Amino acid sequence: MSLDLAIAFGNMPNMEPISSNLEDLELESQIRFLEAFKCFKDCEKGKYRGKGFSNASNLNPKRNPSIFTTAEAKAAEIFDSYGLSYGHEVKIQLKDSKNHLHHYKLDFFFPESRINVEISPDFHKTYKLVAKRDVLRKRLLKRVGIRMLTVPVYVKTANGRQISVPDINRTRNVAKIVKEAQNSPECLKYWC
Image (cartoon, rainbow, N blue to C red; front, side):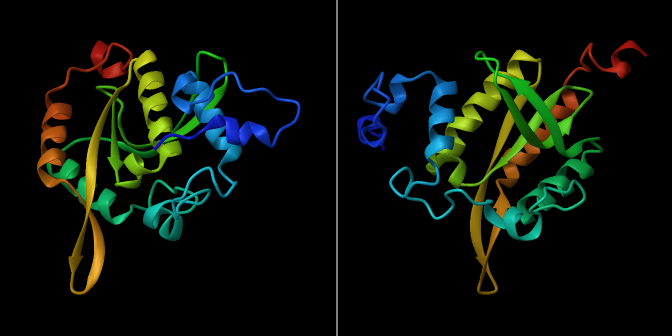
């Protein structure tokens, strides 16, 4: 789906478009544009527009590290079974190439190996703003030496109700990758 910028800029008399297509802009500019226009009806047509996402918005609106979504709880159970030490909902601030500050909360951060594991429901691919943010987050994390791995989430029906579950095989593979990863030189354990 392509967002025609000419339509959006047409409502702004003092601004001329520098491009006619969202993808023609730099990633940072795409995100700022989508964030600025996410409240307008024609920007995105998803039910998640401008709101919290999934059961995180209902069960954990403030992203409390001690509260897990259904999919995160299952992933945490697998990580725990591998004896991995992680931080949940770790806050991080990163600057992009335009010197704008971005605030992120990492689903699972493994500090010794500097690996971030994101639990990624379908809307991370279908909701344009979130998809662009994920691309930028991965780029910015890589710049500061943090590797990002993604675990897709699927919706299943159990006992007449829909539940979100992570891809179990992918979660186990990610746990193995983290377990086998070398300690980062930026971690104290590396030097001990």
